[in-house]
Length: 378
Image 1 (cartoon, rainbow, N blue to C red):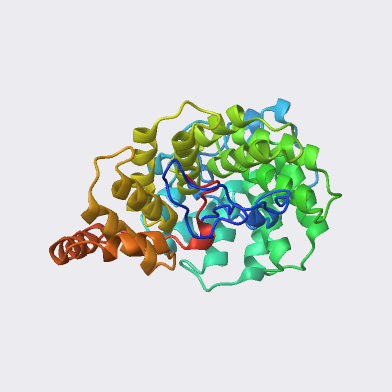
Image 2: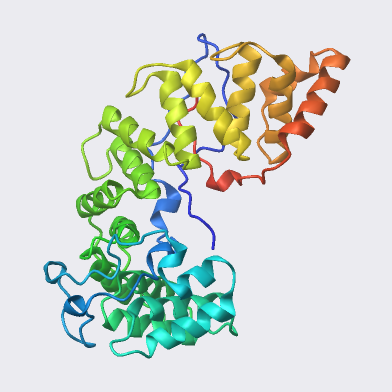
């Protein structure tokens, strides 16, 4: 499943020059309340690394369907014990190794135990949803998610909510999806908090409430979710539902960038380059642009090309500038200024740039422009 990246409105315009004498752009209309894709609660089901843990102790056994589940009672299906350890559960370990049939059989066995494992039910739902080890059946996936929800599994709540949003194997309903996200959010599930915040911003399934959206997004960010950290930074930067604060925005961008979130890397690099909300550091900005560029981000490739062309944050290197420009252009990001720069180069330098572009282009797939982030531009 794809990983959601957020898009800041108006990012795909041609990049301006980096020169200090750059003219100010013409006045722009008021920005949208939040990034366009932030209005689409389509975050995919998270990794299963937290789903398949050893059965809880008898004192913390799952409650019967329909009973209430409260955090203070100690039933959190995703306790910290064994997180990320494939050996902590046979079904989970098999799934991680790609042994989907074995994972299905083991999860089915655990789901039939008394008490049953809600995590196993959630894994069965995921296997049916993706058609891994069993014929794909969105309807069967939704049924297993619903059973796990009855036992209080927060990951299943998110998965079923997403199915509700798309009508995948179950009747489409934004209202029911919002209820499931809210239920999981009460259990401090970051994916649920994130999606609930998006729905509150859009007014989908719930009344539009930017202030509540900020609260939920911040909670998800504090739980370490990179996409939420990026989104919260955008809200702080644009003053969406919260007082505008560039310093706090840069802080959250830095945290998300530290988790290798590509849009955040680009956005934080721009903040560093311009010294907005954080101390100006062109060398650090160049380093972040390079990290994102090497992962195939077209906007980062374009910005890095301009840095090499102007010798800002890096040693001036026309060949590298031309190489990164060509990689960005191949993804659809055209830059008239860089085209002129490359056209003025000597033939032997352009040949060197071709060789570098071929080398730099190895080992990464392009990150589509619609999933990149970079605004304002350095």
